[in-house]
Image (cartoon, rainbow, N blue to C red; front, side, top):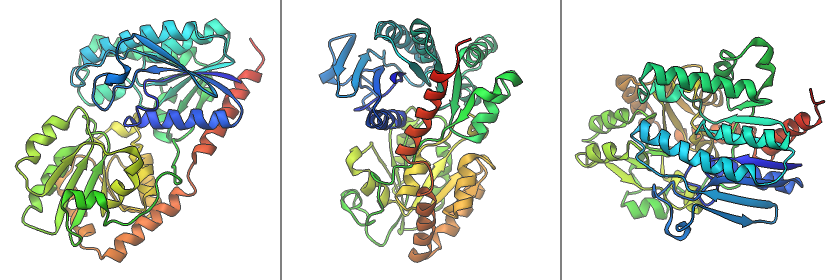
Length: 414
């Protein structure tokens, strides 16, 4: 098959979780014999501006052994302004649409959201090729923006919701990551269209992330002694996460010299986290480390945190769960009950789950985990790793998409 994939991030933009997901998907589709064209942005995510070596053009095209990559200017802007980000997404979508429309004829086209507008680029390209259109939802918008309070104007919310539903109606298939997201989308479409919703979780890459020694170069570089317990958050430092819980826990444990909190990541909430972390000697905040060192970075954490504000699990699935499981580390998750992550942590017995936005319950659960022996924490991590090994691998994910694409391509045209 000739496949067109429209997505906001792609290698080397691997600091964005979706960049890793889409890169691995394309690699595995290529290994299965398919030709792929990728329309994406010029790399920009880590520095929040186009990387110097990629500047100077509105778009660039690279030929690869499996197809080609068309990168367009992303109009990087302030993540804290929903208006400026929306305008940036419009600009990116306009360029992506133009390049996608003239990228050749394809058998199937998939657009990844967020940003939701990129679905339009994929839809228009699918219409031009008379090919099926697959709308891939990593996070569901505008729900995430509304739940965070970033989008409050009633008219704008109404318009965004109508546009969201129009993409579902126009798609030949909608892919979601979890049962929560499935129900979210199912509630927004006619019953006759619910059969087009397909759940394909993101993968657990146990080949690239491996359990390793907690006493490694990353821990040593931070000056953390072997006897200290490290409570780590690694990932997007954004508005969706409840970092006030980490602040409350750090204050609670500030008189203990055997506990250090490490926040490894970048995002819209980073400036605020930096501000309160300066006042707490038991908190270390670091930028993302190199991707090839991820196993060592994750291994540094004796306990890993997953933080998602109340109500967001129905529209967003934290991908960091899979990396933590693959690294064989115990988890404390503050997330909605019965969400995909909560069920995975509970079923695998890889750690503890507490309600979101509840500092008292969060601190109490963390206190219990810190009281565990090293062997007990290790057993939690091993339980998580066993669970990871039966989850979807990159190869399984590519096969699932391949089967979906082939089914749509083979379907009689109406």
